[in-house]
Image (cartoon, rainbow, N blue to C red; front, top):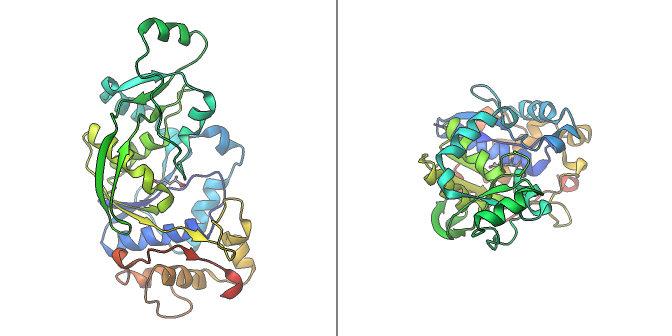
Length: 299
Ligand code: GLU
């Protein structure tokens, strides 16, 4: 059984990502779980546009004192495993020819999920599909029938949501984020998912998919957002709140560990501390439920 951190290497980790990583690591280690790292590099076009970020992310995590068990899993190397999993739920899928723009987003973690898919391609006749295939490569969606999923989030509390017909594989063959996450969490024996609450609304889809695949359901804990000094959501482009900029501004990794852990409700022993010394002091269910406003100018 394990916890995990699963960054997407399309931008450097910012304070919000680092805080999630610290929370996920502390939660796993405090529960004596293994901790896994997964690089979510499904969307190779975007990943290759900014090479070297996975390495930089791994280095940042090491500088904060996070360690990982087992090999780093790269989603880009998992095509065969995803294909095998897809075959198990083939009876639930249908081809979708809707706009490329809508489907293009599928490989990225949906930090704000859009509207539910209205089902345009759900009931196409075989001849309609044949005709559409001549001009477009179809994505695959699952027939989820608006299934209702209830779950208990360790931080956000009881939640429920209905599941729309989401994309599991894009027309270009790239598997969708929701699909890969579920297959990989199971492959990495992940029993505890701690991540940002921008993925809270996606969780019913993932739970539903895990059930269709017959996989064990992890426990979820979604950490509230991190805001900047102005109260705006941290953006990926916010270099000022990356580890390099913060250390250049004089914050040691031990200082940042103390600040991040304190923001998660940990009674930190001092203004600087080692992550390993905080194991056992962290209680996920005591994590503040409000967004954390991170303003280095005030530290
Ligand atoms: N790769 C996603 C991200 O960077 C996280 C996915 C997850 O934790 O399930 O936001």
